[in-house]
Each structure stands twice: as structure tokens, then as C-alpha cells.
Image (cartoon, rainbow, N blue to C red):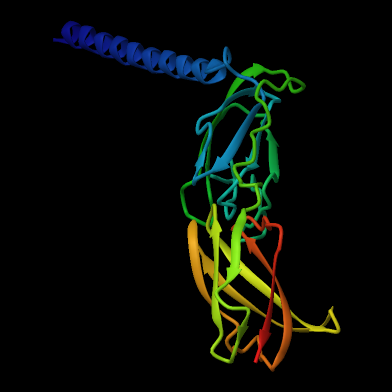
Length: 257
């Protein structure tokens, strides 16, 4: 009985030893995979933040390399905020819960420890966001392989054409202003009094939302911003789109009876 018990104990010790060795080997392989993951494709990376997403949601870098995020629009109320122990303190808007960036703003972070780093937008809770994987291979902090992402905004002014009044002489009921637009915009008319053939005192302004194509608007009626009196006037009319691009002003002359 003693002999059998001794054999059983030796078998148990051998099984436990094999299990410990297997676990240790698995741990070593896991560490090695973490050290070398993605190193063949790693480099400094540039990421655009646009349309509630990262252009590259899972960039990979080596040790000492960086990721640079660019706010390219049109949505700009986003942060790059690290979550989790290893990414704690990485924040494009440290101390602010309401990030607001200009088009073209950028934020960079250099990674000095291997691992997988998780990022979210603190304002929207998740998107835009992603992960950055850092290998254990020393990298090249001086080389950029990605171009600076272009801004995703409209830089072209709207075109305002066919501007005319239905009547150039009208009373307090106003008249109709018609025109054509090639994009959605806000129409503003700055109205000035004309005396002795010259533009004189500023008389007020009127504003309307307008759309692509032909538009017809009520013009010249009394409003909070324009108190018409009998006399001659000149209005400078221009279109302003959502990106603050302003058209060339059109001019209309009229007389209020």
C-alpha cells in the first residue's frame, strides 16, 4: 500500500509540474507576442477625425513613435481621451468636458510602453474612438509615412445669381426678392438710405434661410431689424453658407412710398 501511495504522489507532482510549466510557457509566449505585435507595419501614424470616426481606428506603432490625430471636420466636438490604466492621462482636452476644436487642429502622443491603448471621445461616450497598439520594438520617431489628412470642409463661396425685385417702388407691404443659389445658405440684406445719389445712413438688415435653386422671399416689410420710412434705399445682398463662405454681394436699389 505504501509503495502504491508513493507512486501516486510522484505522478501527482509530475502532473502539477507539467501544468505549471505549460502555464509559464503560455505566459512567456503571450508576452513575446505583445512585444512584437505589429512591428513589421509600425510607424508614426496620422489619423483624421471626421464623420464620428477615425480614418484609421486601429493604428500600430513601435516604441518611441507617435500617433497624431487631426480634426478635419465637419464635426469638431470630439476629444481623444485614453481609457483604462495604461492610457490614463492621455487626453487632447485635459480638464475640459466639452471639447471644441477648429478645423485642422492636431493632437500628438508618443508611446513609450508596449500594450494596447483604448481611446474614446469623452463628449460622445464612445465614437469616435479606437485603439493604438504599441509593439516592444524600438521605432523610428523621425519618419512620417502618412500624409497630413486634408480638411473635410467646404471652402467655396456660394454663387448668388439672378437677383431682382418684383417692384422697385413699393409701400409698407414690401415686395418679392428672387434669386438663384447653388447651395444652401443664409441670405442677408444690409439696407442703407440713399441721399443725393450717395449711400448714407445704415437703415437695418433682413435675413432669410435659402436653398439650392430658385428662391422667392418677402422683402422690405417692417421687421424688428428694419423700420422702413418713405425714401430711397440700396440693399447689399449676400449669401453665407454653413462654413462662413460669403458670396459676392448683389445690389438692389428701391424706393419706399
